[in-house]
Length: 231
Image (cartoon, rainbow, N blue to C red; front, side, top):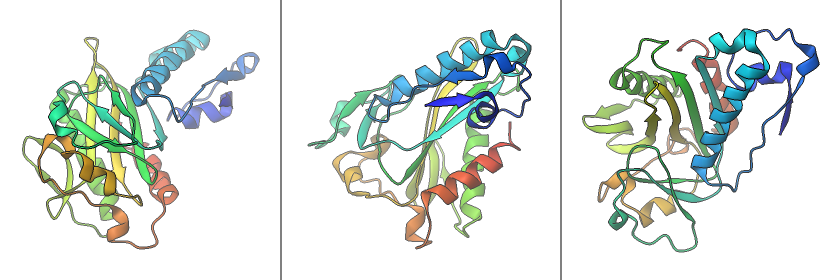
């Protein structure tokens, strides 16, 4: 997709004013059928390029995000054991360099990639994960959904059923990519073809089970608004 300079500040999650109109065309090519990790890698590359195109902004690029929705796909994190991939059948399986085990992405799920400089934000990995979990819980509270965490099992749960997953990668320079997936209004059947996040028998749930008229778009808009006040 092609964005002009004004759109870019919103898409990348940046609260910035761009004064270089001669560089108004800035291209981000996203193909929803490409492997999940390549999308994150692409956005990292494009944001680095943005700093070169607009040098005056390079010091401000300490946080950006991209929200999207994937076609059906199973992804294997760096700690994944293929024994947890029970019966993928017709759904593609993609290796990813994010942390964690196997998970599922599909229509009706909100995926948010975080591109964050944790050094500039004075965050450690544990604090970052905690803040992201609180961010998800805050979204759920807007729909009167009470959630909880489980020690040593990153993500967010409702009645011990997983509603959101977290899978990040942090580079040696303190840059993060990959992010979260929040189940909203989707077909949960593919989760039965895996041991979600490596836990046999782990059940999953979604916002629609508690709010029948929910839409993915509404949750995405709420999430974007809340992110403006977090990092």
